[in-house]
Length: 605
Image (cartoon, rainbow, N blue to C red; front, side, top):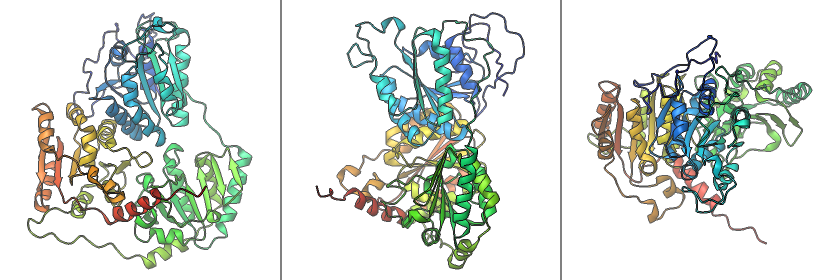
């Protein structure tokens, strides 16, 4: 990567559009420059942070301004190739950075001290749980206030500025408190390197009076950013491969399942390489959907126990050996701990560790290296896939709607399926969209994201903003429930401001349907909004936005035709009115099992 950056003569921002690039997806690029830089007073802390973000692939930062970060934002937007996306609140800024990181490999947000930091904290925790490298930058107090007995605004009224820092310690893998220029360079670089190496968020607090001060360590052409590559222990790798090959090669009908940690290990291609070599029946855990090409000839679908793809669970749980690559087994992915798996049959491959049955365990073995080497020693065995083909019965189609019959959710997703291509991506909100989107068959190149481990309702609005900003050539299709939308609706305005072309399907069924199926009560019913009216008010005649309400299949077909035709360059918001009890079969089954797991009585003392 060419890390030489051309910079303006002054620190006054050259990119005056502080919200978004002018056109959809058009972004400033890093301008390669091999000129010898003159001494420049703009070699500041703020510009160093900006250059480092550009160097690691960040072109957009998501921010909410506050008095402690304003000077820092001046220096960030002065950097060619870096756009500032102003968000409506810090939670959505964090969610947007999360969505951006899913497509770009890293994301960044900028907020102010404590009131902003604690507001973004939930999104940072979600990114931590999903193993996403995210740079959370906070504008901190003036350096002269540290060590005094002063009480500052935006705090809880105590002369202790560490509250925010301590909160971030549990949801980030590194915390940098930058209140001294002499070690600022080291702290910032260490934080960014740690985020990329650990694939987790980091916290960087920068005192508000430091961002604009030149310092010799912030050279105009900084040393290129680099991270020492992680390597497998050679002997451990050989031993792990030999043991796994011996274990799997003696099995009769082995299967292979991909998990969400394929992303953090950057091992998706190696997973496919092994799948090609072994011939096993192939599936993914629900949170790994989109990481494995569904066009693979041996792909069965989603392994999610009783609520997964039909016949996939039966083949997996009847296998005499299975290799799980990057799995996370929690109460949600195990359907209330009801999976019928046996540890003695399993090879578990984590990003840096391999476990075979009840043992042995091989550490310091990288997933990518292990899969590539195992592919060379594995015997081809198609028995499980052949059995799958024998028992497989094609899925039926939803019952045909009567004229003007109220819209059913299964009919909706039948039409969404037809919209998918390599030029689209799907964002699924927590709720019944998890299950309905899981059944979509993704064409090669079609993106897919949802937040399963953390499961924070409202995540999808900010994540859609960030994801769409990171892949401007794709059209994002977001499936969001009304309850979730009410949490984070404001940043539809930022999507419009950025000229994004997302299609949002707002499923209005009057409440928190996923909670209803776990445990019902009056608290799961929400106040109905005029959602299209709300988005029209947010639009306010500025930018490109089109809204419509849909009550039946005929109106849905017309809405999709308009969204993909006449209004293809607009943000399209389609509100779908469906019955409150119209849910997927899978949610009904999953909800009852999770309810059972949640309601287990205490163990006897």
